[in-house]
Length: 204
Image (cartoon, rainbow, N blue to C red):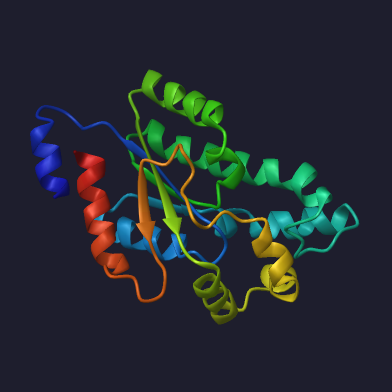
């Protein structure tokens, strides 16, 4: 599929593609992103892998909990730096013609049409295409995924599950998403098959 896309674009290299893969914690966005990277060979950039050591050290230096992902301290002082690191790493790849897949919640970002518009315009000016994928999952499935991975950063979520999920909108995708993937346990179509279908739609 990727080879056919390259041939269709004819002479020279095709446009690099920036793919944002968003979703709530435990939705399966990392697994989906890995599938997509395996198929395409595009760079796979996971926010937590890129920034976790920095985030934990910074939170401690600010007098916070290294595993905090919900207080105002994290949201105001640390989260913006995480996303800045992720986006700058993506553009380092895109500038040399390497497509990039970004795995991060992108909850606030994808809820803001102006943010997506600014990103799309910035990319268009540099000859980069943008695709936004939202991985949809129900709270019961997300909790099972979160419990299985056993990450310290999820401790607050699990200890305050009802409070946490009450602030989520798991019924719909953000209006800025181009493609929605259904990763509920028992979904009719496997995540691997949905990844292939997503790639077809990105190339369409």
